[in-house]
Image (tube, rainbow, N blue to C red):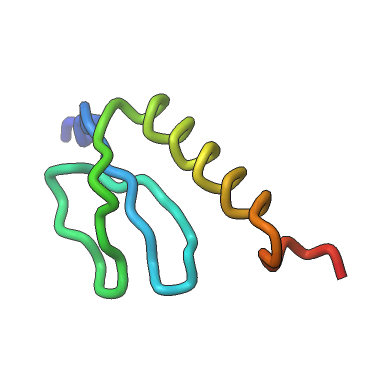
Length: 67
């Protein structure tokens, strides 16, 4: 049996809690997740998630765990 091919492109998705993730372009999203409109290679998509997370925790009033 051949191993599954690694997807070439991933989209950045977000859920209702504001959690970001990457998901293969050719696989349907699970319930509760929506695309944000960004798609690229896994590495670039993960970098985008990192940027979005940094923006989120840098916003005044954001719940960034500093309690």
